[in-house]
Each structure stands twice: as structure tokens, then as C-alpha cells.
Image 1 (cartoon, rainbow, N blue to C red):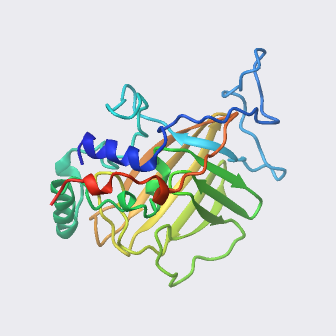
Image 2: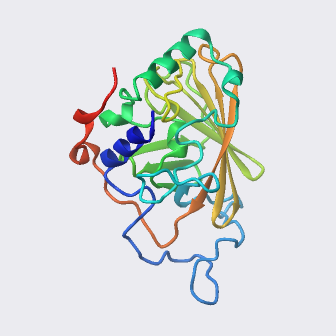
Length: 268
């Protein structure tokens, strides 16, 4: 996919990548003397002492990146390419996955599921270009995605991973705390999702491990490990950082109502 394709995705999404019109003060958060949110304050905690990940978050970009056509807003670092830290020859594709990836590139990303208003899936949603809201309770975390008006459940009640979950876009997620990190394991995927905007594929054998760690009040890292032996010869690991968006909220975004550009897509 080139930047023209990226701009088309922005049109489909129908909102700026990070701009939000809501400006309502978030209650109960630390503030500096001038009333601004103190994003370097201590990590908030639940009543049981576990870190509280609650908030509206957006993925942080790599320094200095702002592709033309996105209103000057840089995309999250791994939105386009989860292998950006590797040389092309070092990406551990299985042969069929390499062939499919090259086909998608040659086709300019025309068949990207989100171009047809289908879900981002996991772990792609961890590097989405629009915000997400995390709602945390003792036994469940819910993640609301503005980008495709969807939700994800992470069960913290000690249940085991199902042996044969129904294949879905987001899989089935269970989590547990390991010190300050929430470790989430997800499986039960079908093979129709893309791992990023450039079209890295996955199979139905995909298993994802995420480590959510809130560094301070306003910053969180998600370390993502992709285990998919059908598609890659070894696991892939990368870390997408997130920044809190205080005094803001999610907006309603209905892709099927906003989509105006799919008929103009180019590709084979």
C-alpha cells in the first residue's frame, strides 16, 4: 500500500486520526497547578492494588513521522508495518505467507478488510489510528474501539483458554497479572485478518500474547508477540506505545455510513 491507499483509508474512517471534538474534563485525575492533566503522575490502581488501565488511549507514532494526507497527524508506529524494525530479508515468512504478502502489496492493499468496513482484529487494533477506551473491572477488561465501533473482552476471572473456540476476527482473550504487567493470551482466529496496513497475513493457528504495562499516568506500552507457525518460522515481537487522551471521549463512527471511496480503489 502506498500513501494514496493510506489516505483512502482515512477517508473511509471519516475522522481525523487523533483529533477529537469532545473537551469535557475527566473527573478524578491528577492535574498540575495550571489545571492541565499531569501525565507523569503515578500509575493509578484498583482497590486490589492492581494497575488501573482505564482511559481513552491512542497509539504513539515513531518520532518525526507524519505521512502526507493525514492532517499532519502521524500514525501509530506499527499501524502500517509490524516488521518495520526488521530488514525485509529477516522477516521469517513461511513461503505461502511471503507470496500472499507480495500479492497484497502489488494490489496496493485493495483487499484490506477495513477498506470494506470489516473489523481490524487483534493485534492490529493495538496500533489503530483512532482512539480506544479501556474499561477495567476486577474480572473483566472491555476495550471499545472507535475505529470500527467494536468491542473486545479480556476475561480476568481465572477461566482457561477454550480448547476449540469459535474462530473470529478478535479471537478469545484471557488475562492474568504478572507483577505490574497484564498478560493477555488470545487465540481462536480465522485466517481473514491482516496484521497491519501493509497486509502481513496470519493463519488460523495465530496465538497472540500482549503485555499491557502502564508506565505512568499518561503512558502505556503494549508488547505484542505473534506466534503463528503456519505463517512465520519464529515469533514476532514488537511494542506499541500509547498516550492517554484525558478530557476526551470516543465518538460514534459507523463505517458503512461514512464510506465513500471504495469504488475508487485501484489495484488488480
